[in-house]
Length: 471
Image 1 (cartoon, rainbow, N blue to C red):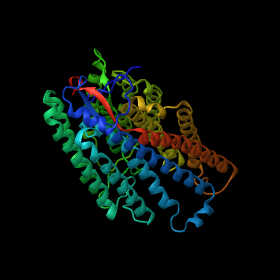
Image 2: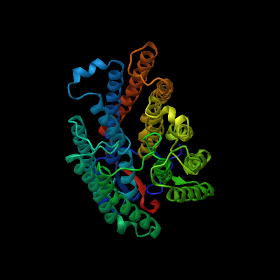
Image 3: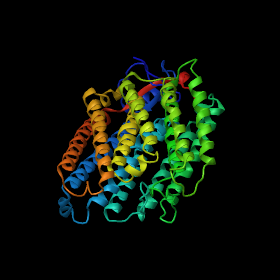
Image 4: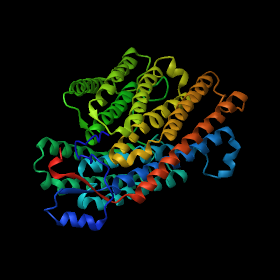
């Protein structure tokens, strides 16, 4: 099995046995120990995975309930004030800031060395602070308070609590970097510089979230649809591309002699960033050729992304999810551009078709990406997150959901009353939506059970020799 060593921390080539805290103290206290091991706590990564899957299960359960409310609207009366609109805010935000964020916290722990040494004891409090702020936000949205901005619904106390959780994460990462500074003197200055720049960027994020949540601040609008402009779409897409590009550097080592995909990717990304900066940032229609042609630049990532990821060494258990990642990425890029074209966007705007596209992004692409991250971080312990039946059930259910929503969106584009007035076609499609949602819920529940077992079994494990630590 290829251990796919990390560029920041090399995982063990063979499965490591769980060690007790007493054994850890013995190794640390004995500088003459023959293996001279660095001690790594697997708890922070395991807990990050567990909390991520917990929010995924909760989000999926709420999604099934919302699908049921759409099929049988009269059930809203049972929920009192906590009806569809309020639960929808909870649904989309806990999936974004819970499931789609906590794996990246584990990634940051590994990058900055917070998952080992003295800083490891603070990882779990930071994780629980993050989830607590998300719980507070959920209660705020159920109470009917929101900024009114999609994915930036933070308001009231939650608007302060979530950025505060981000600042707590930043303090942990900064402290871990300082604590590890002396032991990492043999690393090149470039490694330290990248981490310091990363901290500078991360420090700006909580303040940006707070400011962007203000109802008084709103981006440019596409006057033809009432949605985002091409510039906004390209800007957010490049943010996703940036995550796609930096994730491997935190968890995998590069293969020797394969630098050309990295060089070409850097050039293309820089060119697209300059293109984005040069675009009109005002209210502008997607009917202008400059708008949809600028988005077409993202098609360059169809061949680049597979070549880029082939540049790195990966744990064997990530193979299935890496394949799914690249397929979902291709689907996302192509469908996103096609649906932005004049005529297509006019037909699908504010329909179930865009709901299907969002599932491609979150349930398809991002879920595959973060599954790769978690399995790679967990190493040999990540195998139970790649069981064949749950992997296939999830991905095929997501694909079926997307197809159902695209069909419903196409009909809705012609007949806006289609989703409101009960009918045979509507009821069949919405029933299929519920079935696919339940299958996704079952898959995510299996992952949560596996992550729970991992947290219970995890302890302090020996990882690598000090001489093998790489920047």
